[in-house]
Image (cartoon, rainbow, N blue to C red; front, side, top):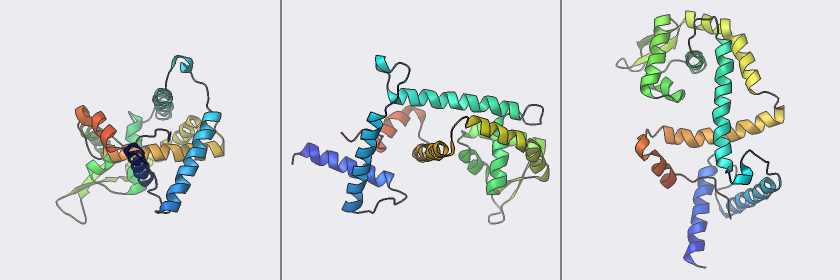
Length: 226
Protein backbone atom coordinates (compact mmCIF):
# COMPACT_ATOMS: atom_id res chain seq x y z
CA UNK A 1 0.00 0.00 0.00
CA UNK A 2 1.44 3.37 -0.99
CA UNK A 3 1.26 6.64 0.95
CA UNK A 4 -1.35 8.11 -1.42
CA UNK A 5 -3.80 5.34 -0.53
CA UNK A 6 -3.11 5.85 3.18
CA UNK A 7 -3.73 9.59 2.89
CA UNK A 8 -6.99 9.00 0.98
CA UNK A 9 -8.13 6.53 3.64
CA UNK A 10 -7.37 8.99 6.44
CA UNK A 11 -9.31 11.67 4.55
CA UNK A 12 -12.28 9.30 4.29
CA UNK A 13 -12.08 8.56 8.02
CA UNK A 14 -12.12 12.30 8.77
CA UNK A 15 -15.13 12.77 6.48
CA UNK A 16 -16.88 9.83 8.15
CA UNK A 17 -16.26 11.33 11.59
CA UNK A 18 -17.58 14.75 10.58
CA UNK A 19 -20.72 13.37 8.91
CA UNK A 20 -21.55 10.83 11.60
CA UNK A 21 -22.25 13.35 14.38
CA UNK A 22 -25.75 11.94 14.90
CA UNK A 23 -24.28 8.43 15.26
CA UNK A 24 -26.24 6.91 12.39
CA UNK A 25 -23.32 4.52 11.97
CA UNK A 26 -21.34 2.82 14.74
CA UNK A 27 -17.94 4.35 15.56
CA UNK A 28 -15.96 1.33 14.43
CA UNK A 29 -14.76 -0.43 11.29
CA UNK A 30 -18.20 -1.94 10.66
CA UNK A 31 -19.83 1.50 10.76
CA UNK A 32 -17.12 2.95 8.53
CA UNK A 33 -17.60 0.22 5.92
CA UNK A 34 -21.39 0.67 5.99
CA UNK A 35 -20.93 4.41 5.49
CA UNK A 36 -18.63 3.85 2.49
CA UNK A 37 -21.08 1.36 0.99
CA UNK A 38 -24.02 3.75 1.38
CA UNK A 39 -22.00 6.63 -0.08
CA UNK A 40 -21.05 4.56 -3.10
CA UNK A 41 -24.62 3.35 -3.66
CA UNK A 42 -25.85 6.93 -3.41
CA UNK A 43 -23.11 8.14 -5.76
CA UNK A 44 -23.98 5.56 -8.41
CA UNK A 45 -27.68 6.28 -8.01
CA UNK A 46 -26.99 10.01 -8.33
CA UNK A 47 -24.95 9.48 -11.50
CA UNK A 48 -27.72 7.36 -13.03
CA UNK A 49 -30.40 9.86 -11.98
CA UNK A 50 -28.34 12.96 -12.73
CA UNK A 51 -30.61 15.78 -13.91
CA UNK A 52 -29.97 18.24 -16.70
CA UNK A 53 -29.38 21.90 -15.94
CA UNK A 54 -28.78 25.10 -17.82
CA UNK A 55 -25.16 25.31 -18.98
CA UNK A 56 -24.35 21.68 -18.21
CA UNK A 57 -23.26 20.99 -21.77
CA UNK A 58 -20.81 23.88 -21.47
CA UNK A 59 -19.25 22.53 -18.29
CA UNK A 60 -21.29 24.36 -15.66
CA UNK A 61 -20.73 22.58 -12.34
CA UNK A 62 -23.46 21.23 -10.03
CA UNK A 63 -22.03 23.45 -7.27
CA UNK A 64 -22.70 26.53 -9.41
CA UNK A 65 -26.27 25.41 -10.06
CA UNK A 66 -26.98 24.71 -6.39
CA UNK A 67 -25.56 28.07 -5.30
CA UNK A 68 -27.64 29.93 -7.90
CA UNK A 69 -30.83 28.07 -7.02
CA UNK A 70 -30.38 28.82 -3.31
CA UNK A 71 -29.99 32.52 -4.12
CA UNK A 72 -33.13 32.39 -6.27
CA UNK A 73 -35.11 30.64 -3.52
CA UNK A 74 -34.06 33.29 -1.01
CA UNK A 75 -35.30 36.02 -3.34
CA UNK A 76 -38.59 34.23 -3.99
CA UNK A 77 -39.13 33.75 -0.25
CA UNK A 78 -38.43 37.43 0.45
CA UNK A 79 -40.98 38.43 -2.18
CA UNK A 80 -43.70 36.32 -0.56
CA UNK A 81 -42.71 37.54 2.90
CA UNK A 82 -42.92 41.14 1.75
CA UNK A 83 -46.49 40.46 0.63
CA UNK A 84 -47.28 38.81 3.98
CA UNK A 85 -46.29 41.92 5.97
CA UNK A 86 -47.79 44.49 3.57
CA UNK A 87 -49.97 46.98 5.45
CA UNK A 88 -48.64 45.93 8.85
CA UNK A 89 -46.20 47.59 11.24
CA UNK A 90 -43.36 45.34 10.04
CA UNK A 91 -40.77 46.85 7.73
CA UNK A 92 -38.88 43.67 6.82
CA UNK A 93 -39.25 39.90 7.10
CA UNK A 94 -36.28 39.89 9.49
CA UNK A 95 -38.34 41.78 12.07
CA UNK A 96 -41.03 39.14 12.37
CA UNK A 97 -38.44 36.33 12.18
CA UNK A 98 -36.69 37.90 15.20
CA UNK A 99 -40.02 38.01 17.03
CA UNK A 100 -40.83 34.42 16.10
CA UNK A 101 -37.47 33.31 17.53
CA UNK A 102 -38.08 35.18 20.80
CA UNK A 103 -41.55 33.66 21.05
CA UNK A 104 -40.30 30.15 20.29
CA UNK A 105 -37.06 30.09 22.29
CA UNK A 106 -37.67 32.63 25.04
CA UNK A 107 -35.45 35.41 26.30
CA UNK A 108 -31.91 35.75 24.98
CA UNK A 109 -29.16 38.34 24.67
CA UNK A 110 -28.84 40.57 21.64
CA UNK A 111 -25.91 38.60 20.26
CA UNK A 112 -27.66 35.27 20.81
CA UNK A 113 -30.65 36.51 18.83
CA UNK A 114 -28.46 37.99 16.10
CA UNK A 115 -26.44 34.78 15.71
CA UNK A 116 -29.59 32.66 15.62
CA UNK A 117 -30.68 34.71 12.61
CA UNK A 118 -27.26 34.55 10.89
CA UNK A 119 -26.77 38.32 10.79
CA UNK A 120 -23.72 40.44 11.40
CA UNK A 121 -23.80 42.54 14.56
CA UNK A 122 -24.50 45.93 12.96
CA UNK A 123 -27.48 44.70 10.89
CA UNK A 124 -28.90 42.75 13.84
CA UNK A 125 -28.67 45.69 16.23
CA UNK A 126 -30.63 47.89 13.80
CA UNK A 127 -33.42 45.31 13.62
CA UNK A 128 -33.53 44.89 17.40
CA UNK A 129 -33.60 48.66 17.96
CA UNK A 130 -36.57 48.98 15.59
CA UNK A 131 -38.42 46.22 17.46
CA UNK A 132 -37.72 47.93 20.81
CA UNK A 133 -38.90 51.27 19.40
CA UNK A 134 -42.12 49.61 18.20
CA UNK A 135 -42.69 48.29 21.71
CA UNK A 136 -42.61 44.68 20.48
CA UNK A 137 -39.41 43.78 22.35
CA UNK A 138 -38.18 44.84 25.77
CA UNK A 139 -34.73 44.66 27.31
CA UNK A 140 -34.42 43.56 30.95
CA UNK A 141 -31.80 42.31 33.41
CA UNK A 142 -31.03 38.61 33.22
CA UNK A 143 -32.41 36.59 36.12
CA UNK A 144 -29.18 34.61 36.34
CA UNK A 145 -26.69 37.44 35.78
CA UNK A 146 -27.68 41.02 36.62
CA UNK A 147 -24.78 42.33 34.52
CA UNK A 148 -26.36 40.87 31.38
CA UNK A 149 -29.32 42.30 29.48
CA UNK A 150 -31.78 39.97 27.77
CA UNK A 151 -34.51 40.53 25.22
CA UNK A 152 -38.12 39.43 25.62
CA UNK A 153 -41.10 39.65 23.30
CA UNK A 154 -43.82 41.89 24.74
CA UNK A 155 -47.58 41.43 24.75
CA UNK A 156 -47.74 44.00 21.95
CA UNK A 157 -45.15 41.99 19.99
CA UNK A 158 -47.18 38.79 20.40
CA UNK A 159 -50.29 40.62 19.17
CA UNK A 160 -48.41 42.01 16.14
CA UNK A 161 -47.21 38.51 15.29
CA UNK A 162 -50.64 36.98 15.72
CA UNK A 163 -52.20 39.50 13.33
CA UNK A 164 -49.82 38.43 10.57
CA UNK A 165 -49.44 34.72 11.31
CA UNK A 166 -52.07 33.54 8.83
CA UNK A 167 -50.39 35.44 6.01
CA UNK A 168 -46.94 34.31 7.18
CA UNK A 169 -48.07 30.67 7.16
CA UNK A 170 -49.52 31.18 3.70
CA UNK A 171 -46.23 32.64 2.47
CA UNK A 172 -44.32 29.67 3.95
CA UNK A 173 -46.71 27.26 2.24
CA UNK A 174 -46.24 28.98 -1.11
CA UNK A 175 -42.45 28.86 -0.78
CA UNK A 176 -42.53 25.04 -0.63
CA UNK A 177 -44.55 25.16 -3.86
CA UNK A 178 -45.49 21.87 -5.49
CA UNK A 179 -43.24 19.60 -3.41
CA UNK A 180 -44.98 16.56 -1.97
CA UNK A 181 -44.52 15.39 1.63
CA UNK A 182 -41.66 12.99 0.85
CA UNK A 183 -39.79 15.64 -1.13
CA UNK A 184 -40.23 18.13 1.72
CA UNK A 185 -38.80 15.67 4.24
CA UNK A 186 -35.82 14.93 1.98
CA UNK A 187 -35.21 18.64 1.40
CA UNK A 188 -35.26 19.27 5.16
CA UNK A 189 -32.56 16.61 5.65
CA UNK A 190 -30.37 18.08 2.92
CA UNK A 191 -30.80 21.72 4.00
CA UNK A 192 -30.28 20.80 7.66
CA UNK A 193 -27.00 19.10 6.74
CA UNK A 194 -25.90 22.21 4.84
CA UNK A 195 -27.03 24.48 7.67
CA UNK A 196 -25.02 22.55 10.26
CA UNK A 197 -21.94 22.72 8.05
CA UNK A 198 -22.16 26.47 7.45
CA UNK A 199 -23.29 27.35 10.98
CA UNK A 200 -20.15 25.78 12.43
CA UNK A 201 -18.13 28.09 10.17
CA UNK A 202 -20.27 31.17 10.84
CA UNK A 203 -19.93 30.74 14.62
CA UNK A 204 -16.14 31.09 14.33
CA UNK A 205 -16.43 34.71 13.09
CA UNK A 206 -13.65 34.23 10.57
CA UNK A 207 -12.58 37.45 8.85
CA UNK A 208 -13.86 37.52 5.27
CA UNK A 209 -10.35 37.90 3.86
CA UNK A 210 -9.35 34.51 5.34
CA UNK A 211 -12.74 32.81 5.04
CA UNK A 212 -12.35 30.82 1.82
CA UNK A 213 -8.83 29.63 2.59
CA UNK A 214 -9.81 28.62 6.15
CA UNK A 215 -12.86 26.64 5.01
CA UNK A 216 -10.88 24.81 2.33
CA UNK A 217 -8.20 23.91 4.88
CA UNK A 218 -10.33 23.02 7.92
CA UNK A 219 -13.55 21.52 6.52
CA UNK A 220 -14.22 18.40 4.41
CA UNK A 221 -16.21 19.23 1.29
CA UNK A 222 -18.61 16.87 -0.45
CA UNK A 223 -16.28 15.46 -3.08
CA UNK A 224 -16.90 12.08 -4.71
CA UNK A 225 -15.27 9.04 -3.15
CA UNK A 226 -13.46 8.20 -6.39
